[in-house]
Structure formats: C-alpha cells, structure tokens
Amino acid sequence: MSLHIIIDGYNLIRQSSYFSTFDIQDIQMGREALIDALACYKRLKRHRITVVFDGGNASWPSSRSEQHQGIEIQYSRQGQTADEVITKFAARLREKALVVSSDREVIEAATRSCAATIDSNSFEHKITAAAQVAGVEDFVESFDADGWKPTTKKKGPRRRLSKRARRNRSKIAKL
Image (cartoon, rainbow, N blue to C red):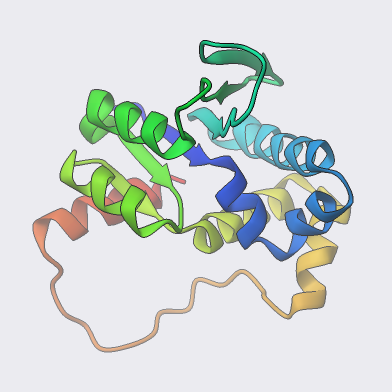
C-alpha cells in the first residue's frame, strides 16, 4: 500500500523553529525552505507528498496546484481554507493518507476518515533524520543547536496499543 503524505503547509512552517525563521523574513522563503526539505526527504522515501497552503485572498477563483521538485503544492481557492482541502483529501484517500498537522480539528477530521496523523513537530524530526542520512548539513546543523538528536532508544512501559493506534504507528514508521 502506497502512502500519500498530506501536509498542512503553514501549520508545519509556523510550528517549526527552523522554517519559521524563513517565514518571518518572507512568506515565500518559508514555503521554499519547506519544499526543499521535503524534496530531500522524498528522494530517500519515495512517498507521494502534497503540501496544502491557504490561498486566502488569492486572485484566482479556483484552487491552484503545481509541482516543484516532485512535491505537489496545492493552494486552496478563494473562500476556502487549507483545512477544508486537507479534510477532503483525507476523506477521499482514507487509509492511504497520512496527515501532517498540529491543528486539532484537522487531526480529528482525518482520524474520522481513517487516515493516519502525525503532529508537525514529530514530522519535522523525521525530515531532519532523513536530511542527516542524505548529508544535508545546513539543515541538520540548525537542529543540533536546539539540542535534539535523532535516536532509536525506547522509553516507557510496554503496553499494547489499540488497533487504530497500531495502524497509525505502522504508517508513521514508513516515514
């Protein structure tokens, strides 16, 4: 089963200490930094990735999409939010989708659609680990300053998760 990763773009950028530094300078720089990091990640993992951004007060009346470095970029149409677009993607793809967002409403809607979910910070750490494997030094060094190091050390007591949580975990493990 192939995995389709659907990312709440601005949510991930603004939750991240790395991407938010670019976003503060210029919103376009934040988007480009995210797309570059995801392209690096895609070269290693080969999952289909769609990043959804709010079109907000865009001049185009319908939704707009484009491809950049193998990443599909989707902008919501005028009068529609990125959250609504992500919810529709999750409802259509169901078990094949993995939604990346820290927005509680988006996570709940994706869970109701049987899509797996992961919060923005956890996914950012997955991107960082992939960048470290790929040897992208400037991206990894910014996280070393934060003190986070990728590790496989297990913590906590053992207990069996629910079937839904185990399915969610297996999809996240593919990242």
